[in-house]
Image (cartoon, rainbow, N blue to C red; front, side, top):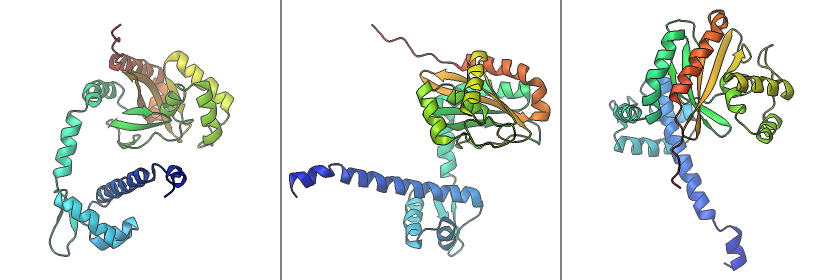
Length: 269
């Protein structure tokens, strides 16, 4: 191969390896999430059909998971099911999570005070993912699963808390690429109106979604920093309950975030 040809794709082997590994990891996670969704033993044929992948690929992943003790076969032709190994590993990881350990007591106390759903999300660039979801006593409640992304940033209080932390140029770029679709009659759909709403939220220290993302649901969110990373705490509930106590809930929310804040350590001179 000539130097010119060799320099045109200098990192192709590395990129190809990364892509293969990403595909393998993604497919393995698809398997585990499928069992969580189906909640029953599954045969190879069923897994292939439900995930729309070749049967040969199913055999490869099943073999690896079974060899590592994450799956077992009930009996011949009766399907596979996860062992408790995944639960034990997850439990061990969760029990040592530094953010969750510190936040759980505080956010559980906040839930008890307002008796509405309390959620914790971590910001990563232009996205945020839920780390905790503490449910209230009410049967009618706002549901969000751990690991789910915060969606519709312009229409949710957590999304507004994220957008309000962006520079003006990053905010403008987001609005241009993502758009501001109307999800309910109350959704803010113009950049100028959204900017005013975000500025108001920054001034008071918390952000409000009053039925902008879903009819009948009100949410409010505030940020705190864990060293240099943004986390967002959200209180969410039915508007019929929460709308009348927004100010009191916001005061408790900001108090919780203030106590959870961890400033970066000063660097030695």
